[in-house]
Image 1: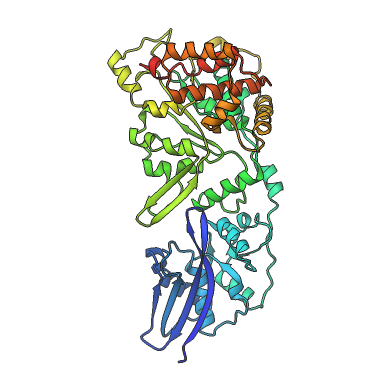
Image 2: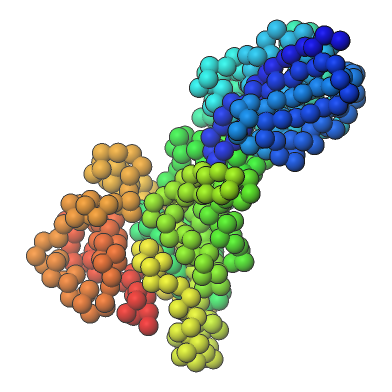
Length: 512
């Protein structure tokens, strides 16, 4: 038998980026077997059996000679079952069972079921962006992934449900229409929230602190007894965040696509993410970098909220691993298999009890904790991490009168309107959309948070009295800048500084 060579193109995912993988299939004389080379992992090696069975159950013949499948470039690790479909198409072309004149023009991805059905893959949005950048004719993707790939303009996306359908399309026997997702329409339809601030009774002070935090993108820590509504408030925080821009939504969707978290047929993540990992989470699961280098919770919360309930219950090493991502907005993951960078510009919201039993300072319930137990509990949160949390707010228990009040609380829409006005104030100041007060550099803080003599004297006295750190000093100024923005004031007045100082009451000197 004369040796025959066929090739098609697929992609490999590293972090959020995709790179082209050339799938070469060569058939020739020798002992009947399939050899896969090109640094495949176990899932890729198992493709032999899936592809063989899928071909036979789709009405085709498997190879009866030695077949070598090369995944190039050979120095890039190939992971997952996404090469099943391109391998099967390459075998059909190399054995002469089908003629695919346009096979090399497409980027092909998909896992095969044993009956020949094409199963969904992760990272298809990144692959569609790669196909556009490489000027491919289009993408052949599983039907469940068509919606996410279809939001990329300038590239044709064809959804295939089976190996037989894909082969008949490429050979010209059937016609498939390229799928297009109307990103704007999907964006408008999906960016809605079921939870609202009007559900929360009382907690006026906590709601004000959350409004300030959202307006400037500041991190927030809530301290209060069990049942005071900390989790309830946190879950409603995304409802007062400004709506995501299309650019932010696409970036967030890309992260969720690579992580394999998009639902079948979901085109875009249009609502702000809200991630609430359990306190038993590991540092790798939080920051990212599992064996296949997938994003962690901090990246899945990109452009949204990361909520850490019962903060002192998290392992200290896990919390310390967040310090660099909070500061930089990116997380660098290095493993033996490679290194990647994920974006993680999120708003951190945490909650905790004031003591182990939760009732320290409660007027109705007695605290059973000793001073040493309280100190040990609070010491689980390091000073450097606490410095990165801009606002500390107490959330007391809600009284029966507040619960039963007939007056409706302020809805999220009203709070969001003020937040968006303050954000617009910041966009104009920084002459850049998306830039907010929490992201100011030390130099920017000195420029945009300059104090007059009265304000400087006020802040100096407070710093000396409460023993704040230098980092806390800058964060107080940034929070005060946000409060002034909510008041539409260019000047940082003492009342703005005074409110900002209220939100640092649990900083290190007062903390002990």
